[in-house]
Image 1 (cartoon, one colour):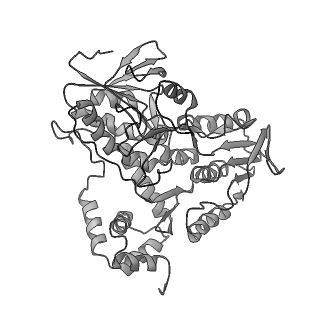
Image 2 (spheres, one colour):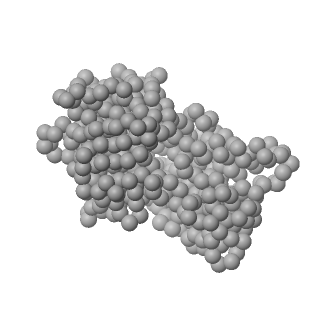
Image 3 (tube, one colour):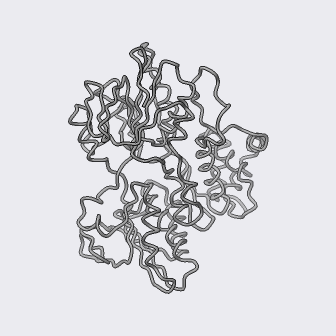
Length: 470
């Protein structure tokens, strides 16, 4: 490992999460006196947005993973394949499980999260497949699959009725429901009274329709008391049998590392998240930063965003800027992050179609899957060392991770800018395969940009099917 000299500033990145991926790449054009180290026990970072598609068979595992070491090498970042064993934050030191020690000027954590309740609910750890670490999910499902014969009936229980649980239910139904003579029953155990309680009734109805179409059952008010071999017992006494169960209950902190950081003086909230301000800087240590699932933003001006990949991705450019400014030590003011109140949610259905929500309305059909695939693959391409390069400006840290428009994209954007509101609304309602995905994507982006305008209101009214002769 290269050792920084006494005149060199040192930045340590712990974890290869979605925000840190952008930081790593940007370090290609960092200041020459900045030494950067990436520490991660995994050699690959899995892109969570594509994993359900991999489960359903639409992607290979390789397509969902970013190789950290080649990316680090591209950017001149030293990669250390290890875990943090202990921390001395006041002394600015990290001890790794390979007995090496890292001294830093600034450290940033982007370590993701664990699966909530999996270690606490009796039997869950022994008899269910957790969604986290996400990098191991597909392998665990493949291992379970080896014991299933083509004539075997399978009963799959997905514990958790959030976006992840719903997507995995669609994925398993698609994966195990084809090319087999045995029956595949899939049931979602949802602790709420409705799916997606934060969405509109029409959006919830669209999801229920797709689940019903595929024979996926949803049981509401289902809080798990105990898991036994082949059976889930709920707190109200109901029992649900299964041959396979997936635990998709949402995010919780990595307890072991969080405890070590807390013992070293880092301020952690009651749920175990690292407390940061709107600049992703620790509220207790000015040279400690965190982004992604492992942190929570403490700011009276807005509610801390949920644990969703879109927020981690959007945190990247802000984090890049602030880490470079903080490690420079010149007193330059840091940039604040302003999380968007809502975002486009896209759920793959496992069969080459998808459903999405925005502005309280839904979109569905093959074109929505094409849109999701385009966005996800586009993000992954940003970190493929075989194709990236030549896009940075000498001496400048690149911070813009929106797509670079080619001629086709420019034509689509122009078409969206010129389209009338009625036609735009009708485009959002289409479910056929002949949709121009790029044009519809730019229509959605125009609606996001012009939300509240007369054009937006009319387009949304037509999208909702109000007063339009179809």
